[in-house]
View 1 (cartoon, rainbow, N blue to C red):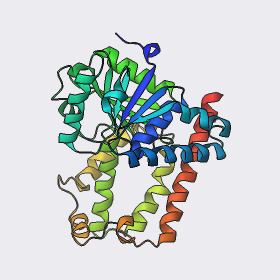
View 2: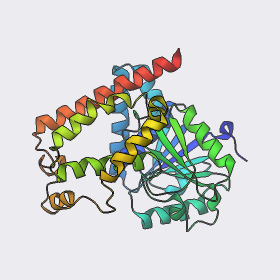
View 3: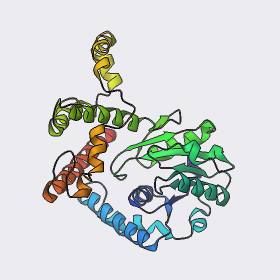
View 4: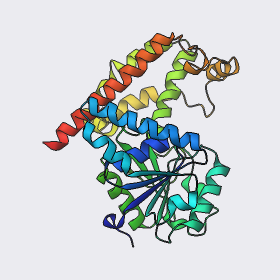
Length: 320
């Protein structure tokens, strides 16, 4: 059985935003990384983006400028999947969220890789069990859901299947801790895993409030950002329940839960907006709200600024 110290080479399959971002994190932690994509243009853009992101982080106090090129030197690119995974100890798949494509990739990886190589999928909601169904050695397949942007969000959801042995889980958790991520263990292969189930339960209620005319979209967002959202980085729902008392939590739930959205279908208003082509930033800024190009850029900048500050604070706490 493999241990953390046995991992020397990482292969990342897929060179898009998540793929090259994950490759960059592994390389920054000192691992040799092979990045694969079918398209040369994707690889070239990925390398360019990695260098830009490493420089950006260093300029904001997360890393050093003198480490940028040594990190880049640990990344090789190839359009040959077999070459990418040759002698790899851990493989991370980051291709498009297409079940048939992912199944074919894992069938190929199963044939190409060493018997003890761990094969991980970076899917955000799809079943690792289903993704690996065409492989023969399915017990070494596991989910590792990174969050975007992968070089800033610490969370990685490690999702086991019914076939995953403890050593695969342990090594995968240890590896992600070693590269500075915060892995959490999802013990059952369920749609959405842990964090996306929580996120979309919140979104369902938020969109329902807008659809039912209880509040407009801006008010919904403000209500979360200026209220309970402020506590979430240090006070999760289970901690909050313990803090206020489970008896009070039960009383509140007895009263309010029957009034919350429990539909198993997407919001009617959401479907209508998609049908009209009102997709948000990607459709000229018309979505739940209307966004000018300047407002779009301002929101993206605020998000990056906030994430950088939050990650730096986390590192300062860890270093104490």
